[in-house]
Image 1 (cartoon, rainbow, N blue to C red):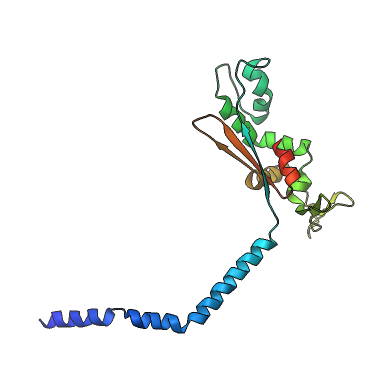
Image 2: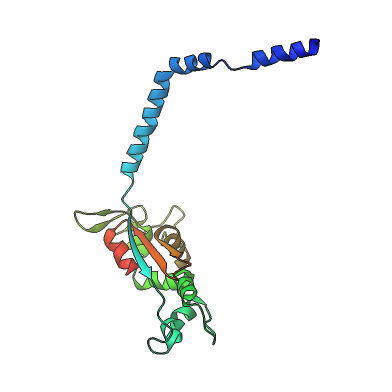
Length: 201
């Protein structure tokens, strides 16, 4: 009986008084309001300080195996070999092949170099709608001379193909597949609406 009484008293002491809790919250209501407003204003200010990101979306479908010259080998053979994908002699899933080609480092590096995208990928910090031109990061690239700058150790800041592909895959391109239809969507993002459209095309 004595033990039960001690246990009962412990439970009574451990109970939370809701009125007391609400009283504490009410007494600190202005602190809560001010902190909430500060975080809200900070979030809005941060959002407005970020540059606009534009996205171009393309719906892709594999070509019919019978269409064109040479069927699938004629259509995707060159790209597949560039990506390191072997088509073989059997019938392959064209959607899987095309998706792997688009994601491959060899294809993306060739695409970036052919269209001279190194500067737009890593040396710009915005896009001017008034002039229709890139806004360059002058700590990385000198637009007037067309030269990449050097760091404190004297090493050039010009990115390698590996760096360019990594940036392009992580920030600018996304591929999603519809398992039912066999179609897949290519999303290309950029600070420039024109660049997003051109890269997707």
